[in-house]
Image (cartoon, rainbow, N blue to C red; front, side, top):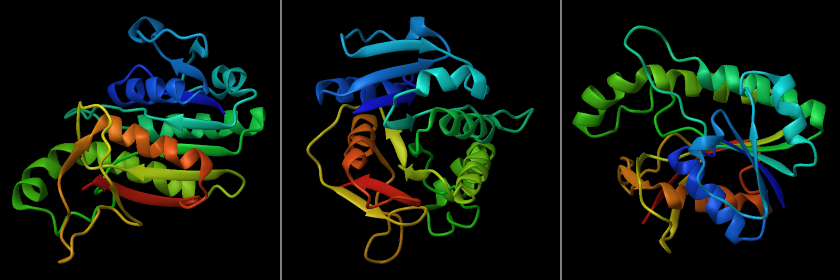
Length: 219
């Protein structure tokens, strides 16, 4: 396939681009700073663009079968996070102009403000408050996508991320905001970025999670 990747120079994006190329896909890596992307390949095109501008993005989406977003935005104590919702608004507008109707986007476990009540104490009362501004804007982006009728979207929600390559581990999935164990509590707390990339690419030939959000982890 022809894949346009957003956030390709980030840690998860780097794994995704490398795996996509190994699988034989043609990749357009849409990045803010091309110097940060060290991968080189005959089937890779690196494009510099403003991710908040549909006009800047649309030419790089032309001919793509799917847009895959691994974009990430840091939280701040001084201002709210808006990058997820702002960039997705521009991406959807650009996809419409380029006539691309499939997007796979990464967010996180616990984007729903009420979904962390079953999480371990330290996550619930220490980690989640620290990253709530990030999760809140991910949640806003997810709600915006739910209003999109003309594009087939999938939101992939991993837990905490470790900078590890892909494995052969089996995926656990759940249509919700975390993957529950048999007792209904979160099953695990982290997975490798390479496995997140592996799961996202597995959706290229699947309609299983179209217009849905899926929480994932590995066994």
